[in-house]
Amino acid sequence: GDQTAAEQALTEAEQIDPEARTLFRRRESAFVKRGNRDLKEKRFDRAKTEFEGAIVVNEKSVAGHIGLGESLQALGDQEGTNEAFERALEIDERPENLHVYNRIGIVARHQKNFEMASRALDRALSFDAEDPVLYFYKSTVHISQKQFKEALALLDKALELKPEFPEAQKARAAVAKYLKPAAE
Image 1 (cartoon, one colour):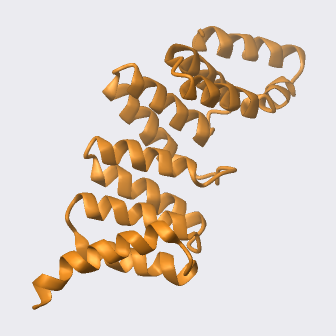
Image 2 (cartoon, helix red, strand yellow; image 1 turned 45 degrees about the vertical axis):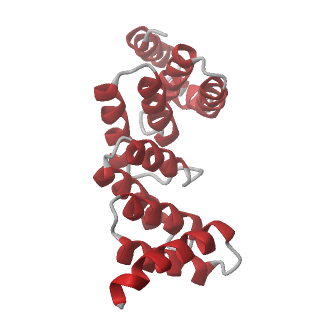
């Protein structure tokens, strides 16, 4: 749980074996997996420690930073949450699972931080512009802001990519119904 001590231990290990950090980096996914399990089971302090471990072994762990942000959110540390999410959004490497950005988007949208939510989803779309789920989630950011025309365009894109997408179909119908009286 002590990030400074862990970093110091890794630095010392590298003096013995220059490949120590690389070897230890392979443990990142185990830290993230345990952290996600702890989040799900509402053990937020433990989750925070696991995600910090993932970040120590790989400072560019998008999933680690996002999980840390979610842990801090649950612990009531809004400033820490925003810092962790910002670090995740600054990382250039493509994460294994692009939908980790949805997690930022969902948390940020609930906090009414629509700019961060949009940036998170744009980041994911920059890696995969053919993922209908990402367009759907981005539409929910616009719906939350009552930007229905923008939401409709995103829902149309999601349905173009995946015509049988029930959530997008339902959202599109609701948005179109809302916009119809404005057109009359």
